[in-house]
Amino acid sequence: MDNNMNHMQPYEVPPMQNAPGKTMLKVVSIVFIVVCALFIFGTLINILLLNWTLPYFGGEAMRGAWIIYYGVNLVFGTFGIIMGIMGVRFCNDRSKAGFLQGLGAVYLTIMVIDLILVFALGAVTYLGFMAVGGVAFDLIMGVLFIIAATFNKQNH
Figure 1 (cartoon, rainbow, N blue to C red):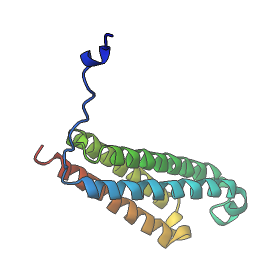
Figure 2: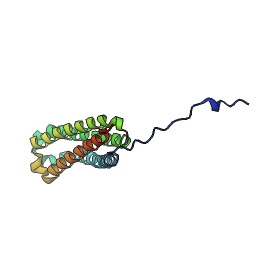
Figure 3: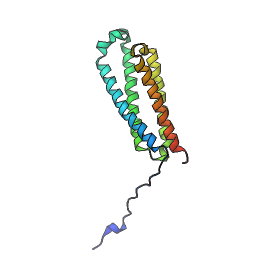
Figure 4: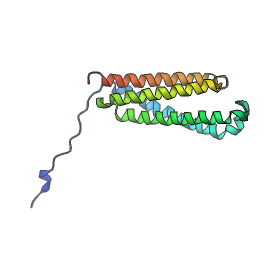
């Protein structure tokens, strides 16, 4: 009886790399996934309630601006979830550290666009601490994500 199994190479699992930023990157990434999912849910609720809230937030003339703002928010939240998934997936892969740094930089760029829209729409006046606190949280989390990816890139 000929057994062809002897001629096959065993599947090799890549060794764990013990990346220095692994834990920090995983924690920040999980927070990104959770917070961005809640952010998308809140944005969808705001879109559904736009007709009722519009008189308090600039009236009918501002409808298009708010739709653009909510569209950017949906892109921002979706990108945050994708970034969180990539962070969890590649948290121990030092070769992906530059890629993760780039994701963090793109996230911060989208955050700046969102910040400009918040101030342009006068949303700080309407949303108050929520708008400012959200921007501060996004900034801190984006920077922490980049720092964790940088830890992984060092000594590579």
